[in-house]
Image 1 (spheres, helix red, strand yellow):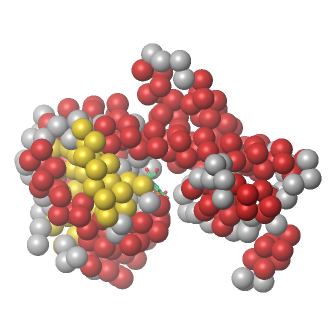
Image 2: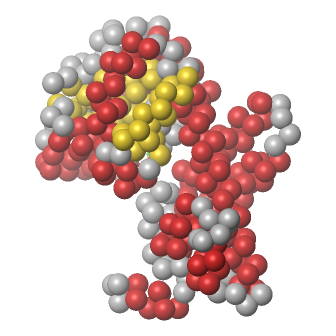
Length: 306
Ligand code: NAD
C-alpha cells in the first residue's frame, strides 16, 4: 500500500487519518500539537514526522488544517516546508477549507518543484469524517494527479464531485458554507423575533421543519444543538466566519452586486470577535442578542446528562 502523509489531526483530520489506517494505508502524521500526533500513533499506528525529510516515502500528502495560509506555511515554509522532503511527482491534497486564490498560488509554487496539488475540501462534518462518507469537492488542473489520489479520496468520501480547475473545490466549499451561514443567521433572527412576540423556539422549529423555512440548520443545528443547549457540532465559529469571509472576497472579485454575502460575513465576523476563538459555531446567536433559545425542559435534561 502506498504511504500517505497526513497533516492536521484535529476534529476532522484525526478520524480521516484513522480511516486511512483502517484501509491499510501506511501513514506519516504531523500536527503542530505534538501530543496529538503521538496519541494518534499510539492508538492507530503510523509514523510521527519530526521534520520534512520524514515525508519522503509519501507519494500523497493530505492537509486538513485551519486555512490556506496555514497550509502554505506547513508545505513551503515551516522548517523548510514539507514540500522540501517530497519526491518529484508527489501530490499534495488540500482538504482544508482554504481560499481558492491562496490555492492557486500554492499550486504554482509546488509545480516549480515538480509536485502536484489537488484541492478537495469536504462537507459532512465530524459525522461524515468519522464514517468516511464526506462529500468531497475536487478541483485540479492535472487529471492524472486526481486519478493518483482517488484511492485516498475514496476512503475518506462517500461522494466525490469533480468541480473543475485548481481552486474550484475551495470556491465551492466557501459558497456552500456561505449558504449554511446565511440560513443559520436567518433562522436565528426568526427565532429571536418570534420569541419577542411570544413564540417558543421549540414551537417555531416544529413548524419550520415541516414548512418551507426548513434547512439543515433548522433540522439539525437549532433542533439538536441550540434548543438542547448542547452547542456541540465541533465546527468552530472562527472556521465558519473564515469561510464566509472567503465567499465575500470571491463575491467582490465577481463584480456582481451581492449585498447578502457581505452582510452575512460581517455578522459572523462580529460573532467571532465577540465570543472568541474557542466557541462552537452554533453559539453565534449569543453574540447577536441576549435572547435565550434553549428550551427549559431540554436544558434540564442536558444538565441531567440526557
Ligand atoms: P481543528 O482546529 O479541529 O484542527 C486543525 C488541526 O490542525 C489542529 O489539530 C491543529 O493543532 C493543527 N494545526 C494547526 N496549525 C498547524 C500546522 N502549521 N502544522 C500542523 N498542524 C497544524 O479544525 P477542524 O475542525 O478539523 O477543521 C479542519 C479544516 O476542515 C478547516 O479548514 C475547516 O474549515 C474544515 N472543515 C471543518 C469541518 C468541521 O465540522 N469541523 C467541516 C468541514 C470542513
